[in-house]
Each structure stands twice: as structure tokens, then as C-alpha cells.
Image (tube, rainbow, N blue to C red; front, side, top):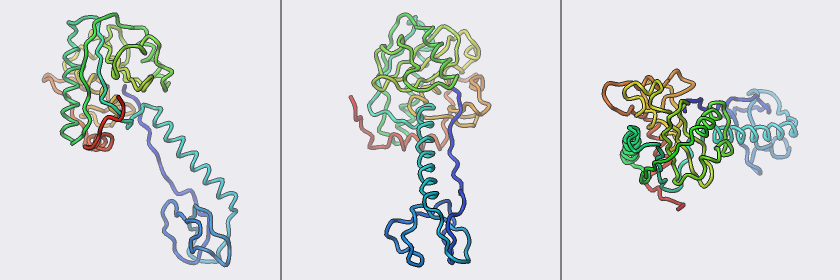
Length: 285
């Protein structure tokens, strides 16, 4: 799914204390309880301190106000983390080796080979960055494709809905951990949030709909969505595999006369190392 990423901006909120001597003028200076920073016999300063000027008398701020600001800062941080997690569950690693199920209406679907290529690409990349994590075995299943449920889930994700509750019941009981469903209808291809016992859906639109009619596009869209399932978000470089909204990146940019998977950025390789270091071991079965 080509959608926006979330970024945090830290800024200096303004001074609270006036002191005779310089204090580091970063965003926040932390004062531990019981520290030696007592001024004229006053009680220890609150936990968040910051300079107002380098001259003049020491003025005690309203400690109730400062404590309230501390609470608001904590709430803001927690809210930001929650939004980031719910948005796409990027940077959320797997705790077990995920088994992959590929559901298609026909065993002659050309995208079956593209899924195999994408899994090979990601396992090779993970090995090259020194990760201990690998995607698990791929099982192909031929059967009815729940087209309506896929379109419904795609629409929900595009509309900004998040959480396991958006995954339709028709998609929840398919065996496997990563379920790649090759549809025959038209929607925005996507990677779902985690649901159930740590399962995720990858929905891939029909090959007859643009821009899948262009060479090399479907190959990279499948690899892109599996990249989301592994835990990567978007970047803004149109020459990279994981480029996506809000940058002006669209799947047609994957067009190429030569079959190839677009590369990852160095930042994304570092993210893979952080999520899945060399000592990674499955913690769940």
C-alpha cells in the first residue's frame, strides 16, 4: 500500500527556570531527585528543567504547571507511538518464521512465480545484511478468491482505517501466517495489519488492470507489499522498491524492459538489521 509515513518533531517548548550560570541549552535538561541542584534552600527542582537566561535571580516556576506539562509530554509521546504502530505496523518484527500461503484461482497464474521470486529476493537480502530471520516455506492453494472481501479491506486501508477489526471474516481463516491472495478484480494492492495469531494479508489486484499491464510492475508491487509485511515503511526515492505515498511514487514507475526488483535504501537495510539482527531466533511457534 502506497501511503503516508509518520514522523516525530521534537522542539524546545520554552524556558521554565532562570539561573545565574549556563545550563546545556538542548530541548530538555533532566534533574534527578535528590541531585545537588538546590537553589537557596528550595526543594529539589522538578524532573524537567530548562534555562530562561544566563543572568538574574533564581525564580521558582509554578511546579504544578511544570508537572502538568510533563504529563502532557508523556501523553504526546505515547500517542505518537500508538499512531505509528496502528498506521501500518511498520518496524514491527515477526517473532516466528512466517509460513506463506499463496491463494489463487488457477495454478497457471503468472503471478505465482513472481511471489516465489519476491520471497527469494527478501531472503537473499536478509542474508546479505546479516539477519538471522528468513521468510518460511511457500504453499500454493488453488481455490475461490474472496474478491469482495479483498476490495473491502483495500478500501478500508486506503480510507485510513487501522487495526485487526478491519479484516473481513472471509479472510481470517485461511491457513498460513502471510497469506498472499492473487485477485482477479481491481483495487489498490495492500498489506494488511496484523490480526488473529499474528497473521497478515497481502492482496494483489488482477493482472489485467493497469499498471500491471506494464512489464516488471507486478513483480515489484508484490515485492513491495511483502516488504511492508516484513516491517518496512515508505521512502520518497522513486528509484527504490519501497517508495510510496506521500511521495509522488506510483507503481507505473516500476516499469522496466528487463525483469528486476528495485533496490532498497541503506536506511532500509539498517532497519532490517535492527528488526532482525544476526542473533534473531523464533520466539513463537
